[in-house]
Length: 483
Image (cartoon, rainbow, N blue to C red; front, side):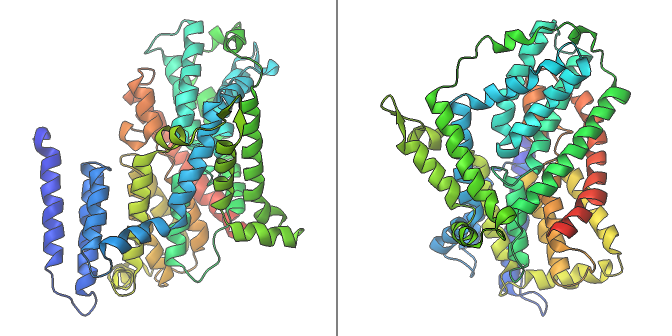
């Protein structure tokens, strides 16, 4: 049966798509609405059970066959959204930092701080904190590809072998804080950006979510969860850290050379882009003219300028960033395509002529109208946390946002700050740490043999629950003040 599982699911998805295309319109949902709903359900089945690659292309084709789009407009709608472009160029900026070696340098620098030497728990805290800090402006897949080899170097120095409980605990901690780093800022982090975009689609008349305020709440949330992780590690997991008492971290510094010109330039350009990105949200009132200029540039143009500068500036006759190499190796194209499909799918679901939002509101609204605001926040957040730990983050986020946000926009659930909840959703989607299918870092850690499925499931579930409590009872109230 397992052998034919994907084929079976593909046939089921195809059947759903065909059936919904032939359903007649009703008083509450038009024929177009049924067609779009069929595309949505079929795509979800394929994304969940088959793949996130070719079903993305199916989604484009199927939507092009509905009355809402043509072959040209379906792609123009997908690519006209700002999120895919932002993901593209922020990924290229991060790739430059990886390529020049700055990110590894920064990770090693954090881990080898003098105060952490001969103090096992201080060393562990810096080992866990390194990916959290670096990942604030870095894609977590590329980040873990840098952090995991450094962690393995430490294991080799300590004489740990695969299966060692302490090595598993340390690997889990590094993996967890890598995933946690993606909740800190929207920069180079796909799922916070998707949540922001979904909010804009369902609440077009409301002000956009401030990336600066998102970052303030995200960093505060990540630090609180980091403290909880350290407490769990020290007082519940209790790994044997006796071998860390006399560790000589100099072995991590052997390969280090003085910063190259390419490295300095990439860091400088990245810093300028970062200032352009956060300035309007934090210092806009103090410098209104500067704010006006940077606000017109939006979130996309700063990383575009940065990428262009890195391709233009040459050192020893070679560009700091090779354009072809950056687009070939620096962009997570599979995720990028999925994001573009999610954007146009969200646009189709919210299209007034389809009537799906009104239909969902009428169908589910009466059942949830008596629900208290905090019950809705708790239930939707923890459902998303559960889903994101067993399936693709993007799929889980799309599913929850396209159900919960319409209920809020139509007033079926009252007393909830929709912008704050959308940000909580964008953060929760990244707490995918309990199973291999959840996200790339768990798969990489288990695949490398340093973390077992059982250890990851046990402590991943515990940390997911603790993260959910923080998101619901600390992050959400904070966001209602900031946004």
